[in-house]
Image (cartoon, rainbow, N blue to C red; front, side, top):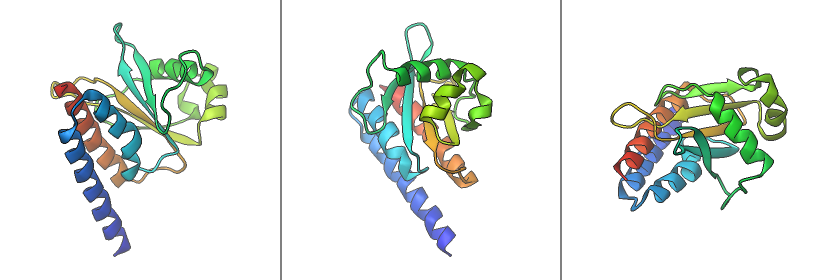
Length: 163
Protein backbone atom coordinates (compact mmCIF):
# COMPACT_ATOMS: atom_id res chain seq x y z
CA UNK A 1 0.00 0.00 0.00
CA UNK A 2 2.76 2.49 0.91
CA UNK A 3 4.55 1.80 -2.39
CA UNK A 4 1.37 2.67 -4.31
CA UNK A 5 1.09 5.96 -2.42
CA UNK A 6 4.69 6.82 -3.23
CA UNK A 7 4.08 6.07 -6.91
CA UNK A 8 0.93 8.20 -6.91
CA UNK A 9 2.80 11.04 -5.24
CA UNK A 10 5.58 10.81 -7.83
CA UNK A 11 3.04 10.87 -10.65
CA UNK A 12 1.36 13.89 -9.07
CA UNK A 13 4.76 15.59 -8.86
CA UNK A 14 5.40 14.81 -12.52
CA UNK A 15 2.06 16.34 -13.51
CA UNK A 16 2.84 19.46 -11.46
CA UNK A 17 6.26 19.85 -13.09
CA UNK A 18 4.71 19.39 -16.54
CA UNK A 19 2.19 22.12 -15.72
CA UNK A 20 4.95 24.47 -14.53
CA UNK A 21 6.98 23.88 -17.71
CA UNK A 22 3.93 24.60 -19.90
CA UNK A 23 3.32 27.83 -17.97
CA UNK A 24 6.98 28.95 -18.10
CA UNK A 25 7.53 32.30 -19.76
CA UNK A 26 11.12 31.66 -20.87
CA UNK A 27 13.70 28.97 -21.51
CA UNK A 28 15.54 30.17 -18.38
CA UNK A 29 12.51 29.32 -16.25
CA UNK A 30 12.36 25.82 -17.72
CA UNK A 31 16.07 25.33 -17.07
CA UNK A 32 15.60 26.46 -13.46
CA UNK A 33 12.69 24.04 -12.99
CA UNK A 34 14.70 21.19 -14.50
CA UNK A 35 17.75 21.67 -12.30
CA UNK A 36 15.91 22.49 -9.06
CA UNK A 37 12.58 20.61 -9.14
CA UNK A 38 13.45 17.25 -10.70
CA UNK A 39 14.36 16.04 -7.18
CA UNK A 40 10.59 15.67 -6.65
CA UNK A 41 10.78 12.72 -9.07
CA UNK A 42 14.22 11.30 -8.32
CA UNK A 43 16.06 12.49 -5.19
CA UNK A 44 19.58 13.69 -5.93
CA UNK A 45 22.50 15.30 -4.17
CA UNK A 46 23.16 17.68 -7.04
CA UNK A 47 21.83 18.34 -10.52
CA UNK A 48 23.73 19.80 -13.44
CA UNK A 49 21.92 21.04 -16.52
CA UNK A 50 23.79 21.17 -19.80
CA UNK A 51 23.00 22.76 -23.14
CA UNK A 52 24.69 22.66 -26.52
CA UNK A 53 27.11 25.48 -27.29
CA UNK A 54 27.54 27.08 -30.74
CA UNK A 55 29.89 24.26 -31.79
CA UNK A 56 27.44 21.56 -30.70
CA UNK A 57 29.41 20.59 -27.57
CA UNK A 58 27.68 19.85 -24.28
CA UNK A 59 28.41 22.62 -21.77
CA UNK A 60 27.35 22.93 -18.15
CA UNK A 61 24.75 25.67 -17.82
CA UNK A 62 23.30 25.46 -14.29
CA UNK A 63 23.90 23.64 -11.02
CA UNK A 64 21.15 23.02 -8.50
CA UNK A 65 21.17 25.38 -5.56
CA UNK A 66 23.80 27.71 -7.05
CA UNK A 67 23.36 31.04 -8.79
CA UNK A 68 26.48 30.46 -10.89
CA UNK A 69 29.68 28.44 -11.09
CA UNK A 70 32.72 30.39 -12.26
CA UNK A 71 33.79 29.58 -15.81
CA UNK A 72 37.28 28.64 -14.70
CA UNK A 73 36.29 26.62 -11.64
CA UNK A 74 37.78 23.11 -11.43
CA UNK A 75 34.28 21.61 -11.10
CA UNK A 76 32.99 23.32 -14.25
CA UNK A 77 36.08 22.32 -16.21
CA UNK A 78 35.81 18.71 -15.02
CA UNK A 79 32.06 18.56 -15.66
CA UNK A 80 32.44 19.92 -19.19
CA UNK A 81 35.15 17.32 -19.91
CA UNK A 82 32.88 14.61 -18.53
CA UNK A 83 29.93 15.78 -20.62
CA UNK A 84 32.02 15.45 -23.79
CA UNK A 85 32.46 11.73 -23.08
CA UNK A 86 28.74 10.98 -22.87
CA UNK A 87 26.99 9.12 -25.63
CA UNK A 88 23.31 9.35 -24.77
CA UNK A 89 20.16 8.45 -26.62
CA UNK A 90 17.77 11.42 -26.21
CA UNK A 91 15.12 10.70 -23.60
CA UNK A 92 16.78 7.55 -22.21
CA UNK A 93 18.30 7.85 -18.72
CA UNK A 94 21.68 6.19 -18.30
CA UNK A 95 22.89 5.09 -14.87
CA UNK A 96 26.62 5.66 -14.43
CA UNK A 97 29.36 4.90 -11.94
CA UNK A 98 33.02 5.83 -11.75
CA UNK A 99 33.79 2.74 -13.88
CA UNK A 100 31.86 4.29 -16.79
CA UNK A 101 34.09 7.35 -17.15
CA UNK A 102 37.59 7.60 -18.62
CA UNK A 103 40.43 7.03 -16.17
CA UNK A 104 41.52 10.66 -16.58
CA UNK A 105 38.21 11.84 -15.04
CA UNK A 106 38.06 9.45 -12.08
CA UNK A 107 39.92 11.71 -9.65
CA UNK A 108 37.28 14.39 -10.22
CA UNK A 109 34.51 11.84 -9.76
CA UNK A 110 35.96 10.81 -6.40
CA UNK A 111 36.08 14.45 -5.35
CA UNK A 112 32.66 15.62 -6.55
CA UNK A 113 30.36 12.64 -7.15
CA UNK A 114 28.72 10.00 -4.98
CA UNK A 115 28.70 6.30 -5.97
CA UNK A 116 26.33 6.74 -8.91
CA UNK A 117 24.80 9.31 -11.20
CA UNK A 118 22.23 9.29 -13.94
CA UNK A 119 22.48 11.27 -17.16
CA UNK A 120 19.55 11.98 -19.44
CA UNK A 121 19.48 14.01 -22.63
CA UNK A 122 16.33 16.04 -23.23
CA UNK A 123 14.35 14.97 -26.28
CA UNK A 124 12.85 17.42 -28.78
CA UNK A 125 9.80 16.62 -30.92
CA UNK A 126 12.21 15.82 -33.79
CA UNK A 127 14.01 13.24 -31.63
CA UNK A 128 17.21 15.24 -31.19
CA UNK A 129 18.57 16.67 -27.95
CA UNK A 130 18.73 20.30 -26.84
CA UNK A 131 20.20 19.79 -23.37
CA UNK A 132 20.07 17.39 -20.48
CA UNK A 133 20.56 16.64 -16.82
CA UNK A 134 23.31 15.00 -14.83
CA UNK A 135 21.99 13.88 -11.44
CA UNK A 136 24.42 12.87 -8.66
CA UNK A 137 22.58 10.18 -6.67
CA UNK A 138 23.08 8.84 -3.16
CA UNK A 139 21.40 5.54 -4.09
CA UNK A 140 20.56 3.45 -7.13
CA UNK A 141 17.27 4.76 -8.55
CA UNK A 142 14.17 2.60 -8.84
CA UNK A 143 12.99 1.60 -12.30
CA UNK A 144 9.84 3.69 -11.70
CA UNK A 145 12.00 6.77 -11.01
CA UNK A 146 13.93 6.23 -14.23
CA UNK A 147 10.66 5.87 -16.14
CA UNK A 148 9.41 9.18 -14.75
CA UNK A 149 12.79 10.78 -15.51
CA UNK A 150 12.41 9.59 -19.10
CA UNK A 151 9.07 11.42 -19.24
CA UNK A 152 10.67 14.54 -17.73
CA UNK A 153 13.33 14.48 -20.46
CA UNK A 154 10.51 14.76 -23.01
CA UNK A 155 8.79 17.53 -21.06
CA UNK A 156 11.96 19.60 -20.68
CA UNK A 157 13.12 18.96 -24.23
CA UNK A 158 9.80 19.97 -25.72
CA UNK A 159 9.51 23.01 -23.44
CA UNK A 160 12.98 24.28 -24.37
CA UNK A 161 12.38 23.51 -28.05
CA UNK A 162 9.20 25.64 -27.95
CA UNK A 163 11.20 28.64 -26.70
